Length: 244
Image (cartoon, rainbow, N blue to C red; front, side, top):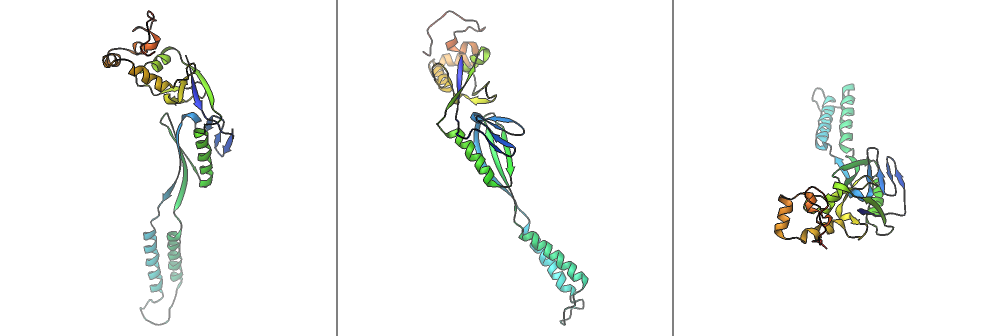
């Protein structure tokens, strides 16, 4: 049995951003290759590292007072008498004042989460760069024009698990892109029926007690109703499909 993975395509087939490369259907990074169809969310943010500005201002004030005091060693009200130590204290005061006035460190990042639960984080000094990457990826995911279908053939136990709605299966491996794809994003190639909806239809077609049996006592071979298999996975006598 073959199913088709529905992916979207953008007019810009390949774009390269530093270590990131957006190709027709995959995003290539230094660590891994992510199928565009396998991306669940893309976001851009800025992490701000706060500085102890209050502490810096207090230290600058302290050294300013010390520098002023060093000009009056005898605590008189006469003319100021700065010394070399006064200049040293003044320089330290300016250093702490500069630290207090310096903007907070900002790190711009791009977060990409995929359907397999992996979260990838990329940083860049320019947020505009990351916004452009997010825009292109979002466009590739959401646009409805230029739809392509990658076909994958399911057989053996993999097909049994797809056919059996009484086992918790929410994604399957796409042999073309190498990533896991949610069942609500694939469809049977012959009927064009969504696989997740198909499983729900089969599940709803049996009675409560039959569901209870398939979930508790039955195995996946029996639960794959439309494959007509016995408990050992061997074909049994043909009978009308319960989900036809």
